[in-house]
Image (cartoon, rainbow, N blue to C red; front, side, top):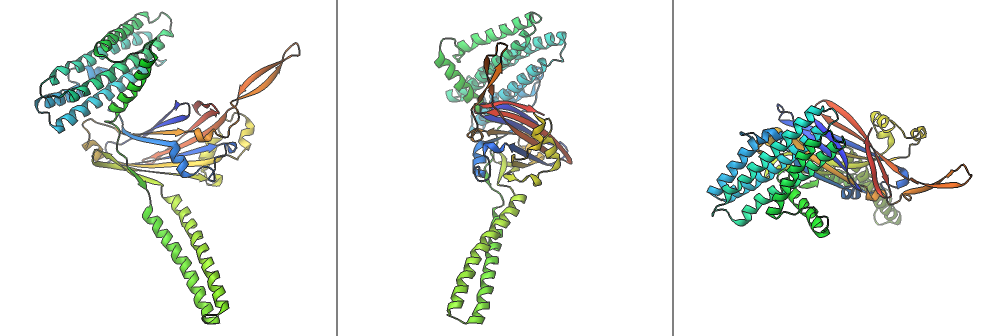
Length: 486
């Protein structure tokens, strides 16, 4: 299965989170994703102004394991798998702090912290759905507070296990990294839940009070441990807090990110094609030389002139043949190929490629989606968009994926961020003045937003199934305004 979600990452970046979920009974899983990006012609994005290198500079792709899924109540239970793995790693480290034990201890802290963060996010998202009944919201909020208190208490008790002469101070600090990260995430998701509940007036007053107590207790703990917190008066501390959270996030999630060293795809085929091109041009030059040598003889002016012309033709034929073969290669091969590795073990590969397309080469289904829901009917009659096709092909060996993970994981996430800074360089000003006639015949100026739309159609294939999604991205000179699935 392929799961695609999108969001605005920052003012100039769109994030696509593409989850490749493997089938449990299938060892070799193949997925493909095609992304057609329709760019207004007025932005001047074309093969002559926007090369493949420009595109790959604008695209950042991170491959990571899908976080193992656990409910907060399952993590908090006595026989919870994450806590059991964590305890074993701590006890092994305290008994015999070898490099292997240290690496496993640090890895388990990172994965446990990531699991708790993911469980908090899903629990809060579940409570905040509009379908929840009042009684259910009250119960779920109580469980949220109870389970989080228990999870963090159990984690913090483990510090006593490694507080031994055999464990060095730098190794002990890893425990604090996970602790501070989970504490910060508790605040973030609890505040999100409180904001949602406060929209209902006094209906959830008791629940908000319980959540506030949870946050205050955590704040006292943060002060005790020397962790940074939000300050109304100290801008420097707030800046350091944001930076610290970013570092801790990278630290924790590094256990899930995979090494994906890239290299050019189809290099051998490319060289074979180019050799054929050189051979064809040489055959032409040799045939012409032999023919006119027989006709004019050696060392004559006519033969000399024909020889020069034949070599001129040879170079042109070589370049045309190279262009032809490169075009054929581009339609069948990809620009880059990368192996997906967990530690030193290969679990699959990923290929990517990008090309500008002519409209006649775009599938009819894609064009129908592109023109669905126009802002104005006249939009459907304009066909001057420049179209970029970004494609990916992913192969995952599920047997190797499972064999190289302590936890069960469903597959991988490919997090793609597209930066649109190059797309806005030739835009008009973000606001256009319009005028409205008032009753007293005076004119009132109204500044209206000037936006452009990127239309993105995605086709994703797995097994024998093909699905589509379409997104409309509103952008202006000031950056991304909105993104909407159509």
